[in-house]
Image 1 (tube, rainbow, N blue to C red):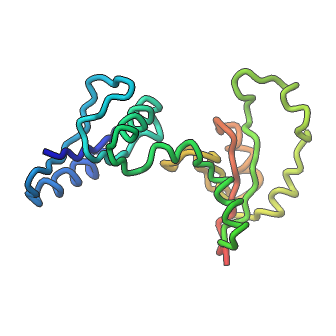
Image 2: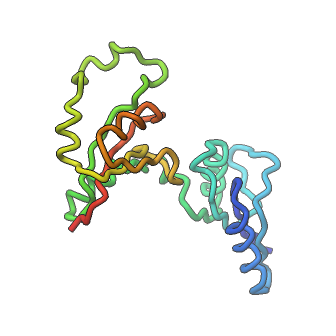
Image 3: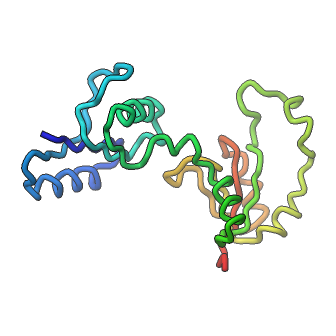
Length: 184
């Protein structure tokens, strides 16, 4: 029996809808179910031929589990290794190098100092930053969001410099700012 597992968090409609749809096909020797993790042992295979990942971007434990499963032959949809290289700012920079149109984007530091840093850690960062120059380049409306990750978490639509100053203190990690404009 080949098992297809769906790994998910709070969402219910999509995961159970996919499971129901796969099982309704009644393909011999194939069954879908929610992933069940009893223990994760280094280098040991999972019980699944395929895992559809809907949550590892939020749970590092699951991401490590999926990497181990992939190394042992499980096909993982939403590649857990990609998160290691998934930085939106880098992806935008790469896109500009191969002439793919993307919104004007800038990288901004987080409002609060990251863990294990102090003001001295930012000796090379101009202070105050040229906020007006940044917004003249990007324009409004703009979107401020984490430079890595997904799930539309901590994404803010900004219509003015005042809204930026209001929302920037809520950022938890490095942020990027992208204009919402036609890229072409």
